[in-house]
Structures are given as C-alpha cells and as structure tokens.
Image (cartoon, helix red, strand yellow):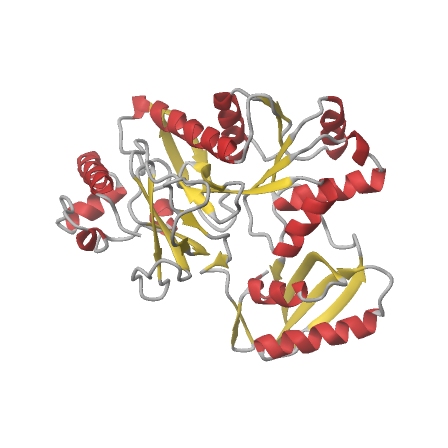
Length: 411
C-alpha cells in the first residue's frame, strides 16, 4: 500500500503541529531534526511511537492543543501498567462519530434499526463510541452497557432490537442464554457488530448460527480514537480502514520494515487529522495483513484481514515460543469441541507446565478426547500439554473480554 500525496500533506501538517506543541512526540521529532517528509521512503524513516511512550507521557503529556480545546479524555484500562490517557477535541469527537456511523452503514445498518449497546461506558472508549455513531446515523440507541443479562434479554425482546453491539465473548454468552431459555422466537436480531478481542472461526460460526445473524468485525483501539476506525462490508473480504482519517502500514515486528501487501505483520497506524493527541507510526502490536486488490463493494478504502493475534502475546514455555492462535487452530480442528478454551501456565517442581481446558458435550469419551488433543498439540508446538476435557458451559463466560491465557508463573 502506497501513501498518497494528500496523506503526505496531512502527515506534514501533523508534524508541524506536534513540533509546535512540544508534546512527547513533538520533542522526539525535533530531536531527530524532522520537519517534514517529501516521499514515502522518508515517511518510513520516521520514528515509531509505542505504548510505553504514551505511558511515559501520563497524565496529559500527549496533548497537542491548548487545554481549553480538550472536551473529553479516554483511557486504557491500565491493567498492565500506568494507564494511557488520550485527550480529544470537539472535532476529534465529531470525526470519531462520523467514522463510526460509516461503519454502521458499511454493515447495512440504517436509521430504521434499533441498536443494543453492551460494551462498557466511562473512561473506556467502547460504549460511547457505539452510541455516538448510532446517533450520528440516526438509529435508535439502546445503551445498556455491560452485564445484567436478564435486563439485556428483556430489552432485546420488548424493544425488538435488530443490532447487537458486543464483544465476541458476551455475544456468545447471550446466544447460549437465549438457547437455554428457549426465547429464540422472541428475538429480532439481524446483525451483530463485534469487536474488542480476537475471535476464531469456530466462535463466529457458533454465534452466527445460534443467533441467526450477520456478523461484522469492527476495529479500533483507545490510542487511535477507539472502535470504529474500520469494519468489514457485506462481502466479508476484510475490514475497510478509513484512509481519509488514518494511514495503515504492516511491518515486520522484528525488523520494523514494511512488508509487501498480502504478507502478515504488525499494524502501524498514523492519525492524519486527529487534533488532541495525534500519533505518527503507532505500533499497535495487532497482527494482520493488507488485502491486495479491490473489494467487490467498490470502496476505495484499503482492507486489512481479521486480527490474528498480537506480536506481544507470545508465551515462552519449556524454551518454546507458543502463540495462543496456534492452540486455537488445533482445537478448531476437532468438531466435538466448543469454541471455548483456557490455557493455564504454571511452574511446578522446577519446570513449566501448560494445562489446556477444553469443552465438549457428553457424547464423547473425555479421556480419549484429551489424548487426541494432547497428541495434536504436541505435533504443532513440540511438547505435550496437560489437557483437561470438561462439559459444555463449565468454562467461564465473560460480559467483557474472555481471559483465555492465565500465566500463574508471575502471579
């Protein structure tokens, strides 16, 4: 993917603003003697920004405008360290709503829809982003936020909501509850807009089948507006990223060099018009690829593939590098297993141990199932895990993101 002249112009305007603001990235650019870029090659030599930079700027070191122009802040959870605070101007909030409304439109959602919003509100970007886009589109927002499944299902039936916005984990929980309560004939959902966490094909198939809806992947992260910076269209050939607001690169996470379109790597994003906290070449650590060619829908906005994982979610066990996606792909090869699993890593008697918990129904031999899973995982990663097969529904469901990997070595 090539950066356009218009995108280069917007990057140069951002560089000027950042240097003038003297915020953390402006100082980095000034120290490097960077005043602008004339070509794609020069752009690709600009320094990356990373999450640690944003943490170092806590609390408001990211501001690139006077404080009186900031109308809102959002923040990451801060569960793995100092939280990141992102300031927004009035225009940033409006731009985000425009992008989000565009996401709904690409999913075929109209002002006639009723959109039930289950992601969290507050400092987190999710709930308020889904709502702002809904209001911009002119659809009816049903802003329940997370939890209270009884209330969610009651409103879903009584208001006849047609669109569900949720994490994949909560969408699955709701699907299972609807089936358990036998109320499927009272549910009027047609579409699901799902984001916030990586989810595999088996989980998609379960949600799609049990709720009987079309599913759309929405992409975003707190540092870059929030959810709503991209979504797949009805042709499901990748998520369109809004190139009038963002420039997307895919790099080799080891070398930092750009990879050709079609090759997998780490997503790097540049905000082209953001005012409150512009970011240039921000390393997301999300793994995807740019899908070459044109989408059948005719959109000019570039597409990225589903998020395959993160460049920083690697687990080192018994000297072997293991990614959750490898385990998920093995488990997906067994039709007898559900989409849910949990990996626990511990250190016992001087050595690492990996336990994998999987769910199945009562029609299979649990011991034989555990043996077959163990053999196939060993052939993929090189060592044998301890596999525990449990009944369907035993593993925890989440109203937010599911915690699939628990590393007890560092607890």
